[in-house]
Length: 179
Image 1 (cartoon, rainbow, N blue to C red):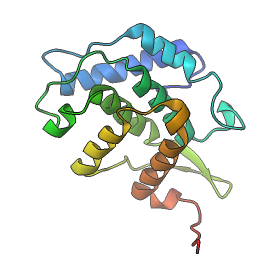
Image 2 (image 1 turned 180 degrees about the vertical axis):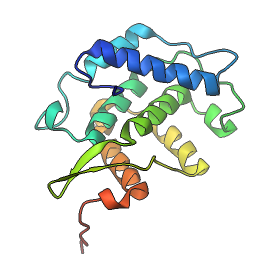
Image 3 (image 1 turned 30 degrees about the vertical axis):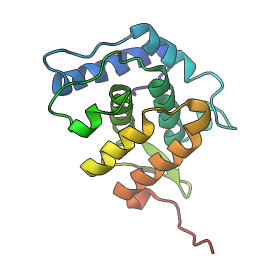
């Protein structure tokens, strides 16, 4: 099952909550993660409405789909309490809204892993999971903590595409040099 953009928004809610539950076991084993489930339901509905791609949701790349989900998730803030677990770098715990940015980023990376894209009229898979340095991960959480769908959808789409190609270079489109 995909995490989002399943046939029914209710399936998205189940997949998203299951993913968050798995994160809770790692990052918050003693306290769990406090979730506003109606906000998750709203996000599952909202990501489908007025999808920000000229050709609509059905024609959007996985990068656009993940970006749309992440910007909605982070801006709606469905995770209600900060994380306080030593398994996370202390620098992340100092970032306001780190909990929503961290969950959205990890879920986005998971959604991209093994996703199919079309390259030169052939389908290829992002077979390698995204890998970042600890420093880059912290900076991404910090950069994403206050994003909004209307202002950051496109730039996040490009960022996700480029970091996916970093670990899956065979999937990248033909490169051009611009002078």
